[in-house]
Amino acid sequence: MWEAKNETAFGVERNWVRDKYGRHKWVVAVKATFSVADDGRIRLADEQVPPAMAPEYTGEPAASSMRWDSDVLYEKTGTDIVAEAFAHAPAVHRRASGLRPHRPVVDAAAGARWNLR
Image (cartoon, rainbow, N blue to C red; front, side, top):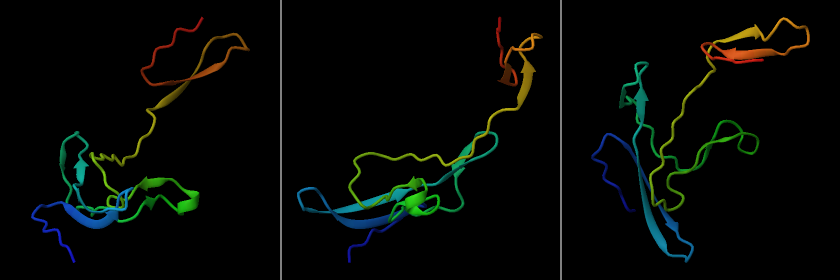
């Protein structure tokens, strides 16, 4: 059995794959996991996630989105950067766009400027 000697703090995984011509290739993936603090500073995460051996989904594979693909099922000639995060809209205020009864109501993010005529 071939072995990858990992002398890093990162996750490492390996696998044999075949290319489109049927040739064997040994794929080694190194995966580093980082955390972003509230102030924006980036640091190495306490827990290093190992490379994925198979695709991972947010729920059932046939009924959900893929979280990320396998890191070692095929040869990759580049680097994947995955940002897993949560996002939300800024505070929203409802403002009437005019005094006439048939004018629309506009949802505007706090601080947005609207020039309605």
